[in-house]
Image (cartoon, rainbow, N blue to C red; front, side):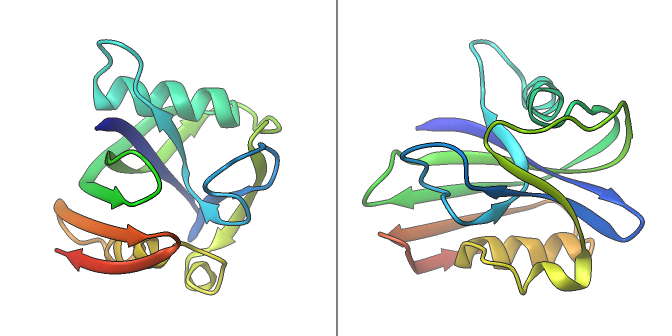
Length: 149
């Protein structure tokens, strides 16, 4: 099981979203997601999210919240524990991302994007500002077949 982070950075009622369109063989190809990635050896969730955000966006997080843990199970990809964050403070200037296109999207427009079906479930909870939560999402191919909250 791999460990990853995913962060939704907030500014003026918008989240910074990443449209994955630049990497070959990307399981997220054509989808909109937050920013994040895999843990390095001995990294904590907080260290990982800060490093990944800086690498992918050029922004340094100054205020962020650990919002939940999502367990992904798939018949195609390795199982994953995704550590979910939101952030409302950052410094720096945004840089181009080598994984896709970064864009600020109004929160009310997010669910209209091409998202993973399971992402819609946890994004609703983030937008509604729910407390810390755990969730398990089971996929067969691109289809969500089970979810447990």
